[in-house]
Length: 175
Image (cartoon, rainbow, N blue to C red; front, side):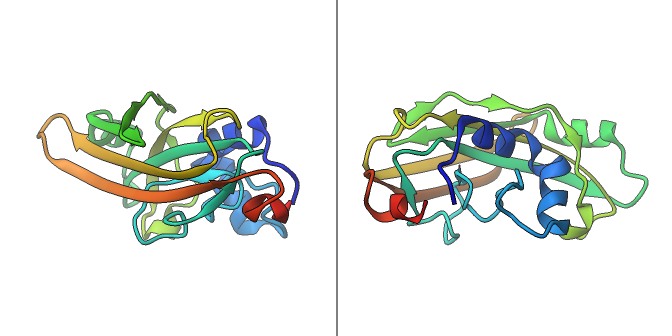
């Protein structure tokens, strides 16, 4: 595995539900697949009790802190229905107790709805691409709270601890 580039991290943010997940599902290799649902290409997702909770990352790599929201249904489910459900969701990230500014991708068709038990689905991702200088070596705490601003109800909340290893150690030895 080579170092994770800025382009790799941007692709994970922008292509997960479109071509990225299809490449990952159908490809012979996951190395170039921009879906990164396994955490091996720089994604850091705040899902407790997951591969990201307690994971180690290399200080020399680019990363993307993110979360995705997916809505869908049977074959008649439309983009407008998805927008009605997804547009009101606000995601608030904190990194080491400090609010983290993020960017949100447009709502797009999700090309593998069957993986989530759906016939038709749409999604967006929200996150931030992090340069090697953005994450210091050591332990970090990442949290997200997702709220439906229409109802005020919490859609999701998660928090993980992850580690950034110095060059020449830990996760940096696997490249």
